[in-house]
Image (cartoon, rainbow, N blue to C red):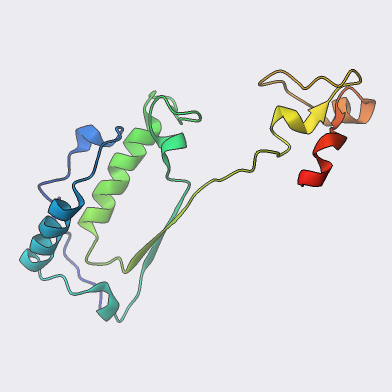
Length: 153
């Protein structure tokens, strides 16, 4: 059965560090987590009769940490960091309700349609970074598939 109470944030949670990368003290954190679970009488997730999976999509440094390649700044300039602060709080407040957490990662191959190597012009040159390529560009022959990468696909 789902618990109706919301858990407090653990003492080691530091919202000021949500947008940073740091070395996690795993052994220390494991001891703290065990103590915290005991303090709040949290049974092992394997004993849950009602199972809840929190499914998270693309929660990774590339999108979530300022300065990384595809950081999602949003209107505030720190949207992904703010989202992850809320996410951390949600997880900690609801650990008594969450059985499992599944996280997907947005991964890419070296040769995909959005990489410059995928396309060439009539002279064999690749588009410059951030070039917008339209369907009309491909239909007109301005940009075409690079046959040199065919074997890699």
